[in-house]
Length: 112
Image (cartoon, rainbow, N blue to C red; front, side, top):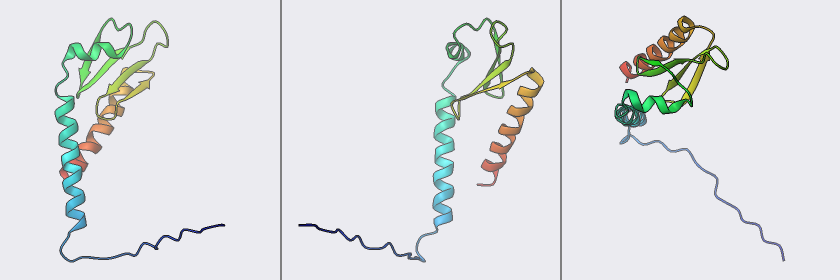
């Protein structure tokens, strides 16, 4: 015996009592605040564990930057908000990429 399960088709509904854009903005703002609170608990020493053999580094706009002299020769940066590592040939290029990302984030937050 063969059975077929039929699910009801979703229907679009609208409600005058809920402002979806306001809810989305509120959720986005809460997420940004949560991430910022989490990232602000890290100190300079906490960033040093991100790479196996960092001799020195610096903090730039909340990102940890270091120069990988021994392996690739590239400049690297860690973004605590996206939990990603960025690599560029030069420090100037890396700082320009960070500026671009941070400026876009700040603009997005200002528009909320």
